[in-house]
Image 1: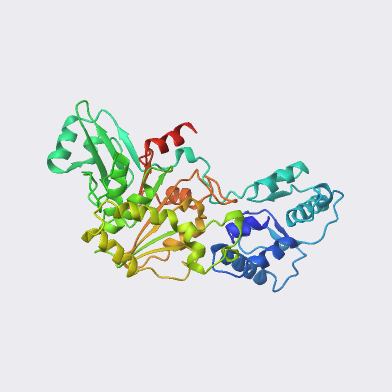
Image 2 (image 1 turned 120 degrees about the horizontal axis):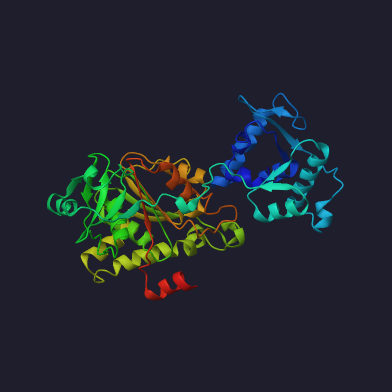
Length: 432
């Protein structure tokens, strides 16, 4: 197992069942570089180091140590390189990845009767391993194996009886068994069509009935299609405390989340708008010049763009426009990075996390676990637009959230498909 797996999940060593797990000494050296800091990866490094320290109190790490629990394998730290092949010479570089390959080659040579597999989230390292005739796999725990079947949160249903559509318009509600053959997931959204008309509806898990969804407006922002109407409904609904919105660029995810939050400014004490920072060339923010605000400003600019768009829905000196400015000045609306979320308790807050596909499943869990009383959390992102090197559409935190939390009465998910930014943006999404 290499460093990338541990930084993704510090408990990974416990998820291989009865199989033995080994890490090269190079991994411990790399983890030492990650132990300081406030990011989730620093937390993962520290937790794993503590785990190894506890494991080795009565054993030497160069011997196979039984892992805690029933039907578990053993653990060992691999030292040196006694293999006939030398990856550092083959690839003409003494980088850490090649030392990890050498340790794996040595283990394979030492245990010829066992299948030795290098587990890493680094695609290039997997390719190099296979070039050396080593088996290599991705870390599969928590991975969504078929994202094409990922929960969408909204569906089109044809051939609905006209009486159902009429009842939704006349009474606002309809028994679910009159419209659908099977009970849907909690807070699921529908476009219901009969031969003559259609209606937007959602399944209310509290009343076990379909309710009509009206097209609402939030701080001057109007939904432009059915999916946007569903998303804004979920954001504004007081009983739905956790919302995720998935869609490609230009579908209005962040704008709807921010508009819905501003519409509820009287309900929540503060609005937090955050996004994970993916530094250029994977370099830490400390390398950039300036103070903390100037360092994070380029990464937060897309969030400010959406706020300016909302302000532009009103005249420049109108009461509504001035109220938004006052919220920023009074820090009732805060745009911030996610680096310092650990250890905080967020009460009476609506918390929007943009670009959530760049978070790990553990980071998603950490954010949600910070929620206190009267807190609502909204995750937005595109699971196919990953900017971090060790995540993909199957292993990122947003996909994990959608798959694991669906059909919970506190949660709603909406997939946005139609771009509404501009015809030019749609051209890019469709043809390029």
